[in-house]
Image (cartoon, rainbow, N blue to C red):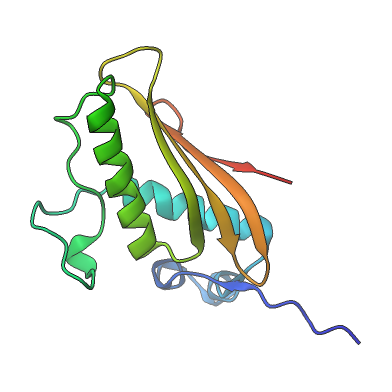
Length: 148
C-alpha cells in the first residue's frame, strides 16, 4: 500500500487569517495548485513591503521582511537591476522557504526607464518538488506560471 502524500503546510499568516474552523482546516495543508497560489500571494506581500535601510543581520527577523526601497533605481541601468535582483533573492531566501530559487531576472518593461518585470524561477517544495515561474510587473502584480 502506498503511503499517503504529505501536503505542504500553510504559512502562519494564512492560518491566522482564516475566518472560521472550515477555513482553518483548508489552510492546514496544500496540494500543488494551492501551494503555488499561496507562494504567489506571499511573493506579492513580500515584494510590495519595504524593509528598513539598516543592513540585514545574520539571522533575519520580522523587521527585515520585504525588500529595500527601489524607487530611486532605474530599470534601464543594469547595475540597478542587479541590485534589485540580489535584494529580491535575499528576501525570498529568508522569508519564503517553500520556494527554492534558481533564477531572479529583472528586465526593463517596454524600454521604459521606470517600469520593470521580475521573473522568479525555481522549485516549489512541498511533499514533492515542482518547477515553477512567477512573473511580476506593475500592470499584473505577481502571476504564477506552472511548468508541467
